[in-house]
Length: 131
Length: 251
Ligand SMILES: [Zn+2]
Image (cartoon, rainbow over all chains, first blue to last red):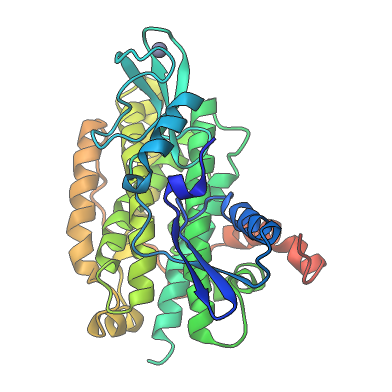
């Protein structure tokens, strides 16, 4: 639904001699998807014929939701996840666009999301936390 | 003190490891689904931070050990977490109060560590501080909701606070390790973290209609490794048995 480039976690791709170096930053330090994402990057590059790959972790500058691209934000909403908003909560319900919302919990199905509910259509939804 | 940085990193990593493991024990059996998910997510953040701190500790030690070796193959006396985080979970109120007292310390500590003269330390702190601010927001809100809740929840939160209070002081006790790192600009001054902690704690407890205990006696011995409680041994027996029974197992 959203690429890791649109998510903003790819911080650099560069050739170092004959090795392709990809720099990745984690969204949350304990994100369980990190190792799968790294594996997928390697698989994707191999299928494009790149053989020597080095995946580097960069912690600083720390990932921020500001790095989500416009396209990424739109794709998240299409999928039913409210994109991050600097005001601290979702702008509108990803289902019906209503703005009458309430927070259910600071944490949703993953560390990067919070659990909200729309008071118009009554649907619960995930909100991608702004960090 | 050549080993001061290694000791200090163990303290950071063992606090997050032991507390992270403790709260993960609630996974699948917290009082309500939202809290179950929140605690599991907090545990995940703490485990992620543990990997970073213990990873750096292993690198600094340079004896060929990994973060996993440090987590799974050290015995009780080699752990450097404060005693408060190894306490058994008790009821949900006790778990949340312990989390709050720790979060209120963890956030300003990480904030200070962002300015560390050691760039590797500063980078891990920069990553972790964002997570810790969410943890504190939630644990403080929950302390208020339960303290200022029903008669039963209020009573349980007060008794959790009374029980945990003598364990909170250890977070601010300093020794030669803290002094060495303060002088080299690696770690912030704990005596400056304390008033920030006190302010958060006083404000939150007042809103929660809870009474702050006056005694400032502090149990100690965890962060220096002098003496842990037997509870840590029980926890490690569960956490480490697989690596002990099947050395080198991986998946
Ligand atoms: Zn709606």
